[in-house]
Amino acid sequence: MEVTVKDLTEVTREVEIIVGAEELVPHFEKAYKEYRPKAELRGYRKGKAPLDLVKRMYGEMIEQDSLETVANDLYHHVAKEKELKPIGEPRLVDMNFKRGESFQCKVQYDVRPKIELKQYKMIEVEKPVHKVTDKEVEEEILRLRRANSTLEETKSVTDTENVVTVTMQELDESGAPLIGKKSENVRFYLADEQLEQPFKDALKSAEVGGDYTIRFEHQHGEHMHNVHTQLKVTKIEKVILPALDDALAAKITNEKVKSVEEFRKGIAEDLHTYWRDREKRQVLNAVTEKILKSHEFQIPASLVNNVLEGLLEEMKNDYPNKQLPHNFDVKRFYEQNKSYAVAQSKWALLREEIIKKENLSADDADLVKLAEKEAEKIGIDKERLVTYYKTSDQIKDRIVGTKLLDFLLKNASIKEVPEPPSV
Image 1 (tube, one colour):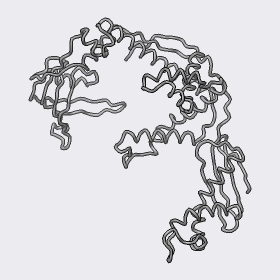
Image 2: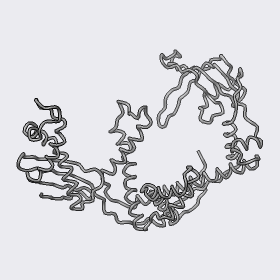
Image 3: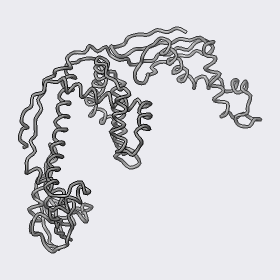
C-alpha cells in the first residue's frame, strides 16, 4: 500500500491511497459474499449459487460496485494507522481502478485548525441593568387574572375587556370582495397589546351583526402592504376578570401562597429572576462575541455543514410528518444561515481550547450535585441518576459547559449601566 498525504489548506488534507491487486482480494471476497444472497442464476435457488459461479458471472460488476466501500475501508485503516485525526465526514474525490492490477483513490478530510488562544479573560462588557417596577408587577398580575378569567356573551362592546368574533372578508381597491379571501370565526381580544390599532378603533363600539370596514398600511419588517377588509361581527364576549383576593392567589400558585401580599411579592421576585437571567445571557453573548472577534482562523467546512444540517433537521420539525415542502429552497436556507453556522463552529473550537487550557472537567462531586438537584424534579432516585450520569458524555459535557460559562462571567470585566428606555 502506498500512502501520500497532502496539505491543501490550513484545515483540509488529501490522502492518496494506492493498493495492488493482492491487497484488494479480501475486500472483494467480502463483496462477493455480500452479493451472493441476491444472485439469481438458472438452476439454483436465489442466493444458493456457488460462490465461484457468482464470481465468474458477476465478479466485475461486484468489484466496480464495491469500490466506494473499499475506498472508505482503506481510508479508515490509514486514518487509524497514520493517526490523521480527521474531523467531520471524509469526501471521496477520485478513484482509478485497473482490474487485476491496482486501485487508486483520493480522499479529502478536515482537521482541527491550530488555534493560538488570545484574550478570553477580563473581557470588558457592559451589562444593562433592568429595575423591576411596580407597574410591571401589576401588569403581570393582570395577565394572570386574564388567564383565569371567564367569558360572558353580550350584544355590544363596552370596553377593551371584550373578545369580538368576526367573519373577515378581504376587499380589493374598489371595495369588492376577493374570492377565496374569507375567514370565519376570527377572534380579536381588544385588550391585546399586539392587536393593531385600526382593528381596536373599528371594533371599540361594535355590536353583534354589525359590519365594519378597515383600511390601513401594515408594516411587516421592512415591507409595507395595504390592508383592506370587512369585519362582520358574529359574537361578542365580555371578559370577566376574577377578583384579586387571597383565594385567587392560592389558586394560581397551587396553594404555595395564601395571601395577595405574598402573591405580589412572589411576582416581583419572579420578574427579578427573569431579568437577572436575561442580563446574564446578554453578558455571556457579549463576552463570547468579543472572544470570537479576537480570534481569526480557518473554519473546517465539515463543521459548518454539520451545523447547517442540524438546523435543517430542526426546521423539518415545524412541518407535517417532518417533511419539508417540495418547493423548499435548501440552498437558500444554507446561504441565509451560513454566518450563524460559521460562528457556532468557531465557538465550538474555541470552547474546547479554553476548556483544555483551564483544565475544566466534570468529576464525581459534580455528578452527585446535579443528581441531587434533578432527582426530585424528574422523579428518579438520586443514586440511579448518579450511576447514569457517570456513563453519559452528554451530561458531563453539559456540566463542563456550565463551568466554562461561569468561568467566563467570573473573569469578565463587567460594567453595569442603566437599561436604555424601550422604544
